[in-house]
Amino acid sequence: MIPARSVSRLALAVTLTASLALAPAAARAQDGGMALIRDTEIEEILHKDSDPILEAAGINAKDVKILLIGSKELNAFAAPKTMGVFTGLILESKTPNELQGVIGHEVGHLAAGHSFRSDEMAQAGLKPFLLTMGLGLLAAMAGSGDAAVGLIGSASYFGTLGAMGYSREQEGRADQAGATLLEKAGISGKGLADFFDNFRYQEVFAEARRYAYFRSHPLSSDRIEALQRRVAALPSYGKADTPEAMAEHAIMKAKLDGFINPQQTMVKYDEKDKGYPARYARTIAYYQLREPDKALRLLDVLLQEQPENPYLWELKGQILFEFGRAKEAEEPQRRSVALKPDAPLLRVNLAQTLIALDDKAKISEGVAELQRSLVHDQENAVAWRLLAEAYDKRGEDGMARLATAEYNFNLGDMRQAKVFAMRAREKLTKNTPEYRRATDIVLAAKPSKDDLRDLAREGSIAGVR
Image (cartoon, rainbow, N blue to C red; front, side, top):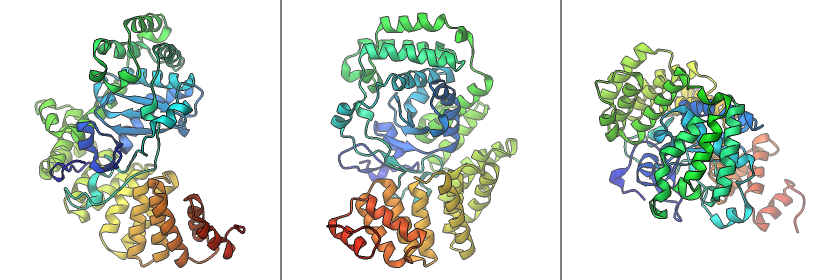
């Protein structure tokens, strides 16, 4: 657990430790821990990088959830309907093509059936890996700079990461499969070969000194050279990254640096650099270093240049909200939603501010925004938590308890989910959709025999012996 003095404003996370201790995502990413980060802008860029490869593998990219994992580890994985990309990998990749190469390799593992071997998964025993709002909501949940006020998270996504260990033979097959998928997608395989070649030195390191990725994905010079020969012979080898892709890659890295490494960002992105990524990174770094006025001055200049950029408006809103200026935060957050209405996280940001204003009409509007966001992102635990808060402010006890049950259900805390679902049923009208949903949560949350008898007695389920 990170000491209180180190609490950052990025987000709170549940880490992969036996105690599931609370810790801030940025700090965990810096000292070797992990946190699942949510950010619409970065997730969108990662989808652009990965979707053509997934489609080439016969996978519907719309069904795949991309997890952005805050960690300095250089790692990635692909699993059915889930892909994980570590911030360390993004920051180490020099080009979009290198990142796509690693994604192609991981999808190659998936296509070859290397992932999710049941015996290894059972032995791994990893705790659920949770988190909530990362760069999109940050620590606005706290309402003040360094307050770590509670457990916030998204769904329990995976208990498999530590179990993925492949042989050199499997690595070679995944290389070849990845090269084939990249070519089918019209993407050069050069980045894949270059990325592994950049880390060829890891082959001679002792096991403990290697990146975790290269402990589970062992390198060899023969393997790298075989891959280089293969991709060099493919038609798409000479295709370069587009200027647009290069710009988006630089923006993604700048944003991550600003949030995760604010001190280093001020050195890495020199003030003489007037490019957009550098100024974006410095803006975020000032915000993370608790200098909101400097951040806002830089941000207003960026907004003058890009008034239609929803992520700049999102950032302005979250800076204002976090530093106690909720009334001022409302308008930029409205602008972000208006510019990108299909982004549920932006609606959650706006709803949070509306609910915090303690105006009845705005609380009701916040409820409506949360409901819209949950249509597209039903597993967002933070949206459920905010919805519970809003219903409580409106005096709707049954709905507040149901939303709290949903919150805990999506965190994976089945005991608390059941407790609040049972309490919700006491306040909700029988046979309404909300009452039935509360019953469903009870049934999904490992109810006791007494619970089942109670449900049977009232006719909610068939009799239980």
